[in-house]
Length: 312
Length: 261
Image (cartoon, rainbow over all chains, first blue to last red; front, side):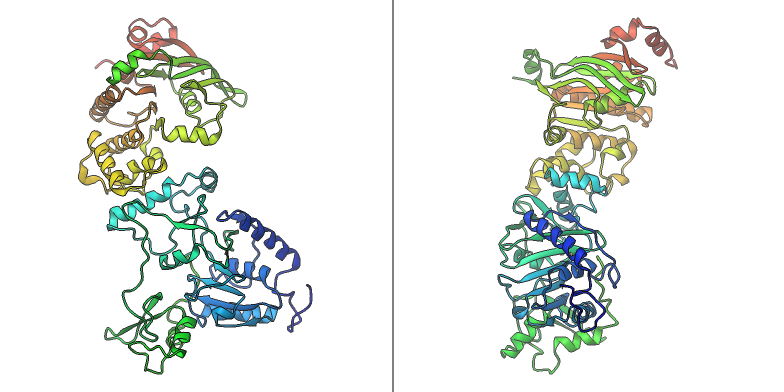
């Protein structure tokens, strides 16, 4: 598939065919061993590390000319990271893009899983800053590999123990560690723990790419994923205790938006497609009558909020 | 049946070492070391720096590869075990107390988390149980219960060493390796630590291999003594016998080198 795209300068989806072949092999291995971090020869991409170079390479290796791509950053289709990656693939692969979760065949995401349930055949690609869940507990890579090999995951619970000892509850609210199919403990990338239950038994294929750390791991469809916890402190999801101010959704993950310098604030769905869809269906939140959409809010904050894909 | 009764009825050695040899390239680490360690027994290993006592200990504990020889623990061949089994043994039946508590503790994790780690490593998943067990063990090593959420970096050297001991003993191991557990502590803290160790060893019926260059430590703790020089065992026997009536020239030198105050 070496047809030039309309720009005439790039191979389809930017990466050369041998590189895509190498990445596909890594992806196949990752799918065969759910949760296992497969090393791959990550390439320099025309964007900085931390902006989703791993996810972009995985997406590039999965794309076909017939695919419809959706890119989200913190749930939104229109933040800097999402816009630049979408444009990147429009230019280098010429594929169709969409903002509708249901219409997309490949969704590249940073920090969220879409609210709309995914379906069989869809691929969700995560951008991962640090793939090793044990990294901040055990700095030696040789040792963490051994721990994965021998399933020595007591240390992961030490982290949760420390949370409870210090805060009275498991305070880890994102990148919450999970156990995949009873073996590998996996970092689900910095998604809020609100999204953790969606990892398990998901009909879509979930691929995780870490560019700087050169690792790919995966959850095949319908994989069993369990969030780690204690018997007397079970795993709980968390979200802001509000309804969406635009669409009135009670069960979606919310962003807090400061609206003025007098303490005014509103809570809106972080998933812009989900919110817009509900508003189109006639749902209305506390400030929903306002002509503003979450999109205009997000736009008005570009340049103020660092929309990078940095680790934390 | 008390622990001492149980020990008295056991006639099989817990640890049997036969011809253990370790080379570092052309140099000898330790050569042809053999001994039996019975349940409830404390074996002291003394010798000057570079005599191979730490090499021997790390070979025994599986931290280093052993060149030749046999190690049998409870009838099982340790060197033939898979790494999974050996590491499982290392966090259940065995314990290793490092000379420097910083090597044996997680300095960024609270005291309670340090003690609880071994429990969680063997599958404890109830926070309340883990915490009460940790508090119990901190009490046993004389660390105030209100320090349970402090990090070891806020502890004194003696407290860190006691915390390391608590962390190791929480899963009730049967065999403890100690590498100079009193090194780097001042004499009064040393005395209290030795007192504590002696009590724990007696109460729990532990078998201990303790490496030290401090003859006072082995005099207090060890039942039997092994003297090493240049990687070889030059003399072994009951502690009092070896220290009061040394036969080998090096042991005589060692015993006579103690400063009298």
